[in-house]
Length: 424
Image (cartoon, rainbow, N blue to C red; front, side):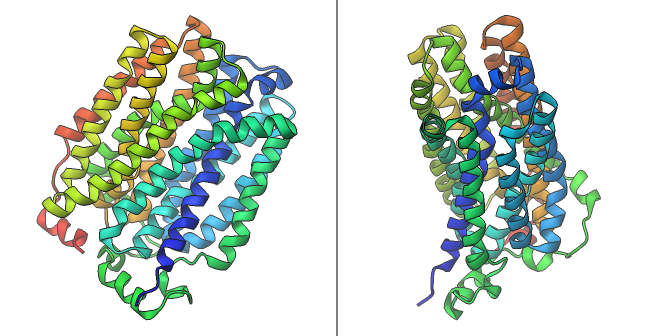
């Protein structure tokens, strides 16, 4: 009887992503005392939010080769130590410039999480289980972290103050390191908790990509010439603009547009991310089920394209009838449909360049991070110049439409020789 230690490994990765996203979103719930303490404007807050993604984008691009070379365990433990300590330093920033520097380092430290998570799933799971696992990691963990972030962080602010809130969540990362040091291994071959039967199950169903990797070498030409990978990156950017926009500005939107208190914001902000959890689970189920029936790589892009189309369309009522009820329903639907794609980006990026899974995942993640640079600043400028969020929501819808059209009509099925690398 095979053991099931592979799911302990996946649970560790899911917990890491939850901590990762709570850390990066915490600033949005402390925005009022934060702005008063450091004397910053809405536009400056947008800049502080976006510079996180500058560090993230650079190191997302570089962390893929690092993960491919050194393995996910070493990279993750180092990264978590750095981003936990950086989170704890935010209350000590001293001013706008200090905040910029700390947020850049925080972004750089959090960047390796998804390339390492993707590599871990590829090493630890048979291909038939990978789509669902990556939906848990890239969808459920992300939306779930933001689902609990609102009530958790607002309660922490009430209990220990906004500074104490940053120190507590920084401590969560250090606790994860203690657990991961004993349980996390880069491959099942390195884990004494895995018996022979489970190891055989994993190896029998492992993607052929593992055997085609060339450790320590990155073929950047293959990355930059890859049409599907570029389209995946553009689509991820489109969804990322909506995601980052809501992650950093949804509490402020609810507060300023509808006069909600901090605790009320925390309660109402639950709905979109709860929809995201549902969407991520649906996406994980669909991608595995449809691929099993069709054996078509393009089926994954089709699912993502339809989801992006529905996501963008869902926001239209927000700028036509901006009442609290309409806004919550529309934004929840937009986020829910968007998160259908949550874990599929990682599957699709590996499908596009299976010989370099960590680097392919890092390339896609860098595009997502670039949207995180642009979206918070754009939303801040829009709010400060117009006094409303309407133009920001229109931009989200248009980008989602562009991403959807590319995913649906511009991707191609890999040639037969490429598919040989993808087969299980």
